[in-house]
Amino acid sequence: MYSPVYLKHNTGSHPENSSRLTAIINWIEKENLTKKLINLTPIPATVEQISLIHDKKYIHNVKEACDNLIPPLPPL
Image 1 (tube, one colour):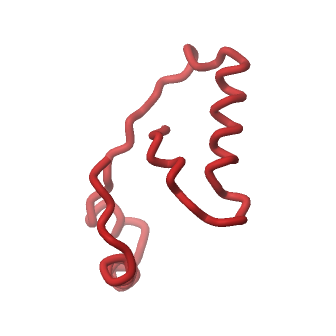
Image 2: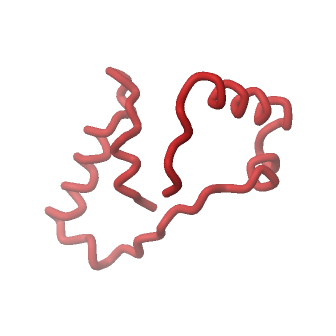
């Protein structure tokens, strides 16, 4: 699963950053694996789906933090 929007995920110097994803995509292309893969377009999860894994209080806290700290992201 991949979307170019993933490259906008800025984690600073953390190992999980956009250069890691770029390296993976480049390797897949270099090895001619693109045609062997099925590209799935991500869709936003519903709160109901997220609550299957995360506690509702945690979901509320994350939403509240996001609403107060950063401008809303455009839809994918």
